Every structure is written in structure tokens, then in C-alpha cells.
Image (cartoon, rainbow, N blue to C red; front, side):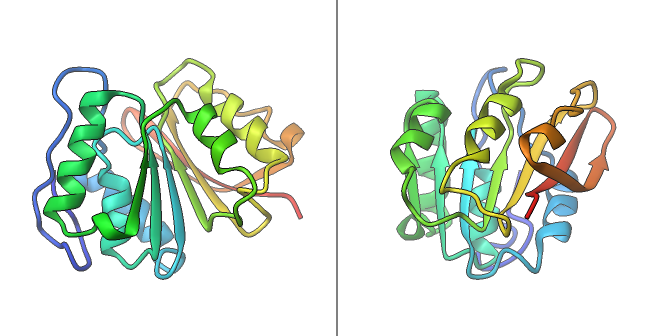
Length: 184
């Protein structure tokens, strides 16, 4: 796994040992950032369920102003720190070592993030839990781009009821990215 573009381009990234995380492949990461490319420079980026931190590192490398990474697995947090240090991007990052809902409560009251990316464990309903919270949160407004990585089987028929619309969906062999915004 490596950084695709930007100031840390081609730098290799460490991954978390074991089966607790699913690193996003370079090809899928490249597709993701092709969609987000005009939104990333100068953005405030929130990476939930960060794993190795590769998505936030990519965003910072491509010009995000600041990234907040949320991960509760201690091994993954160490991996995030190593990747941010190696790519010299630590000074623009903030790591929260806790579960996602705790982090969201702690961050509440800050200005909205420009991009919120989440890659929760598949098929556990965590997407709905997080999006339910963000529907009434200061952390996301109608301009915030929310990206959810989920299994192909994940049902998102409830999105409209929470006040979101999916403006783009990218399906891959085993998973998908939904690009969402709050209804204005």
C-alpha cells in the first residue's frame, strides 16, 4: 500500500497486522480520490474507523488542511502514528484513540467538516448509527461530503428518512462507496 498522489506520493504505508482491518486497495483509493479531488485541497477531513490511516494520509498528501482520525484498536493507532510520522504529515493530524461515537460526542460543537469518510466493520449497522448522529450534529452541514464504504449487501434505503441523498455510488467487486450530502 502506498500514497497515490500529492506531497507524499509513492511513499509506502504500513498496514495493521491481522484480520481486524481491511486496507483499501490502491485502485479503490485512487477511484475514491478521483471523485473527491476538487473537495480535498484546504479541507477539514474526518476519517472514522481509520485503520492504518491511509485514507486520511492520502487526503493530507493531496492538500487537506487538517485531518482527524478516529480509531480504537491500539495496534491500528500505532500504525497511524507511524504512517503520519513517516510521511511527515503528523503536524496536520489529530488522532482520537476511542470508539467513533465517543469521538463524535467529543468533537461536537466544532465547525463542520468538509469531508467525512467512514469505513466501519461491514454488516453491523454502524453506518446507520453514525449517520443518525451526524444528521443533527454540528460536525456536518449541507456542504459536507460524507463517504461511506460498505459491503455490497448493505441496505441504504433508510438514508432519505435521515435527511441524506446519495449523489454518487461507486461499486467495486466486494464493496461500494456512497457519496452523500444532507438535504438542504
